[in-house]
Image 1 (cartoon, helix red, strand yellow):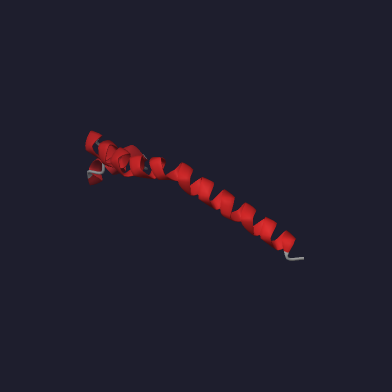
Image 2 (cartoon, one colour):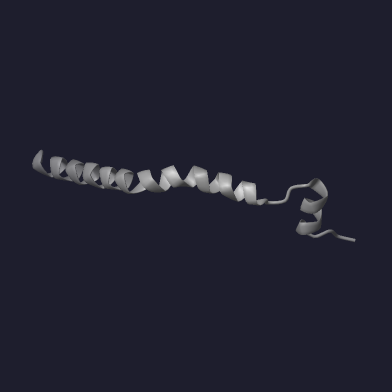
Length: 57
């Protein structure tokens, strides 16, 4: 008889607990704060490269 994923995970003791959620959130908070600045940096850098290539022609 085939076991479901839930049964297999339960047998192996791999449950997603509240502490796993808290740790995941704590790892994502800095990334979510930095992401808009990184996106803006790459957009400005790409735009400046396009303008620089256009002016060098």
